[in-house]
Image 1 (tube, rainbow, N blue to C red):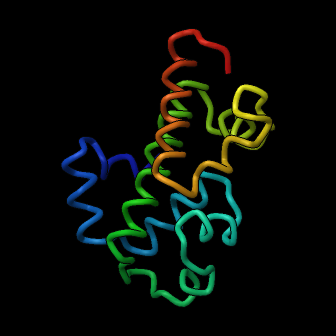
Image 2 (image 1 turned 90 degrees about the horizontal axis):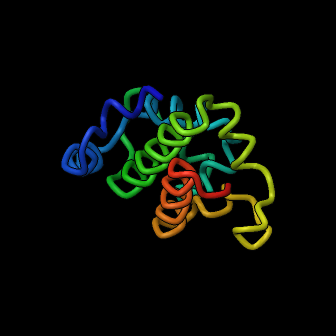
Image 3 (image 1 turned 180 degrees about the horizontal axis):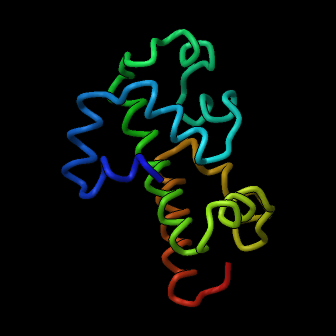
Length: 130
């Protein structure tokens, strides 16, 4: 995922979040995460209209930028563990009994949910069931 180059460390994630990310990067994250615009906007706690009306090089607020970068980092980790972004997206869209029977992507709306998914991915990387 191209966005991962912005978040090589926690410090760089903070720096890029504070500066705000441009719409072009946000749209790249959206595309690679294979989410609809409305769905992605809801995870970022903004309207899809707000995304649409931004200019290509206009920046989003630090809060929106940070959440988008956290999602990008999660998808990058998922791609690494599953070996393919498509396989990871399928996992994110499949009801998971070990997560209460919900789709993992339903947790993308909070930082705690994103961290829960990251922990789950790390468990999968170490041989625990998906």
